[in-house]
Image 1 (cartoon, rainbow, N blue to C red):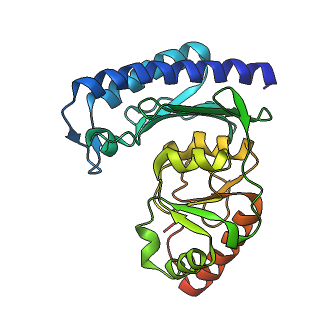
Image 2 (image 1 turned 90 degrees about the horizontal axis):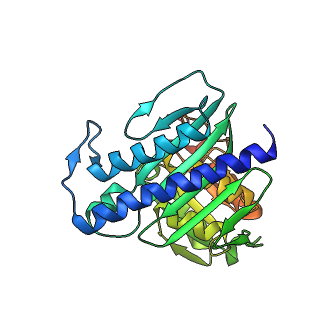
Image 3 (image 1 turned 120 degrees about the horizontal axis):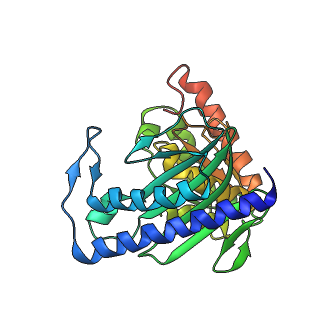
Length: 270
């Protein structure tokens, strides 16, 4: 795949995110009924119509690519190109009338994430990135901070429920004590801040790949490091995140590795 094709795919992803934003803004003003899915998470008509709008645009842009969406699943498990789509990441925020939700669109080529768009239509932010072309926000290229010392680092924590159940919770406590500032921005917001230098580390133990695929490209292309809590590259089974500036990520990974040693055997990403 050449650079020009990534550019065309990125443009399609941005167009699709804009189309989803129109749907989301309509239902944000109007209000929606909430259904509960089999996994006990909420879903609305906004989620479904936004994904349909996204799929229509992406299918035209790359007819041979598969699409894996939060609401309508995977349509082809053999294609080398795979779109990863969460049309409304943060439905719980959406239904509670808080603006911390977004549209996430990423493209994976032969298992590698190559572009991502993260659009928060009510919050008013869109970031995008593609392999080798950097990360962009409000028309300007952005970079992670140069922070190299945990004592100067700002940390943000998202979904960490399962992290509380083993020795890594103590490792996190140590990092919090060693850091300069601790926050919990959550969802797309702390990854956007990380990519443009406003934070130095993001930690989550309970995610889905559709939540973070686009954000991984955005952080990586801004000069950051984005792995799971064990330091492994992302794949379709990823359930945790450790993302940060290169130096702070390395220090955090070492701290969690010590915690992993203490907790012994257990489920990956737990």
